[in-house]
Image 1: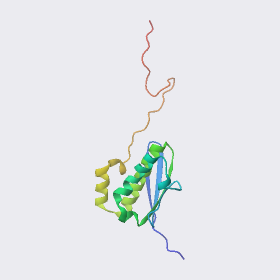
Image 2: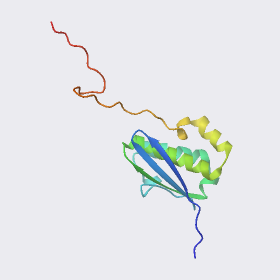
Image 3: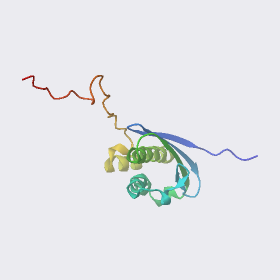
Image 4: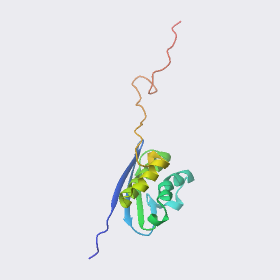
Length: 137
């Protein structure tokens, strides 16, 4: 019988995107929605997702495999949600205060969610905010 592997699950959110990161002991493979990180497009999203991986260092990354499932929102918010989920999973795995300090000094949004959301559209208007007052005469 196979020995059960320790799996760490972490969640990251940004706008309407939700990312779940699954971290297992392995060889350093990173996949986003079943796509290898090196093959991910656009390039800006790939670089954004790689930030916590670079900060964690090669020593830690060579020990783990990370699988991320992302849904909702656009490619930019999906990338930011995935990067948050990866950073949180790495922090749970390493249990290091130095890594947490490094993440917070680099960018606070690696660990802390941005709670801003779009304002809902109002009835009888075509936008979220009130229209400019019209002159009757």
